[in-house]
Length: 139
Image 1: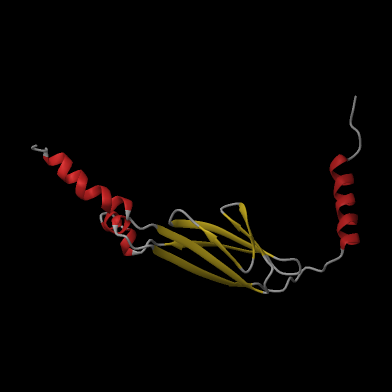
Image 2 (image 1 turned 60 degrees about the horizontal axis):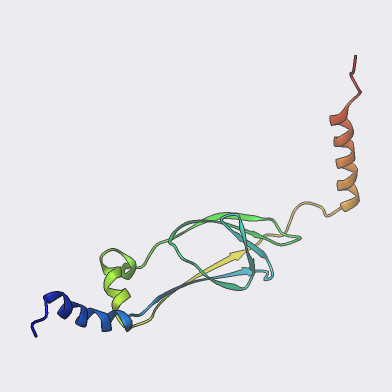
């Protein structure tokens, strides 16, 4: 029985695809002090130290917050490793080798210079509210 070239190609590629490796991307974030809340692109990601999976490379807006410390706002640009560039990515995806790209980010938070006075803050909010409401100017 004479088989077409398609069947021969399928017989070669099918086992390769079934044995194909996968790519895992993780982002580990630490802070000094630990326990800071991390937001990535406006979404809460967790508290430091933390490790999360990520899907895409590129620019990330990062915010790191902790009570008693200044909020840190920055950008991180994650560049894909060469084995994730086209056309190399196709070769590494079909190889039966699991690939892992683990990125690490570390941030140091500065102590807050603002006094922590909840009563004073409420008093200033009340004054601002009174100022904004102003006298009633109805005819």
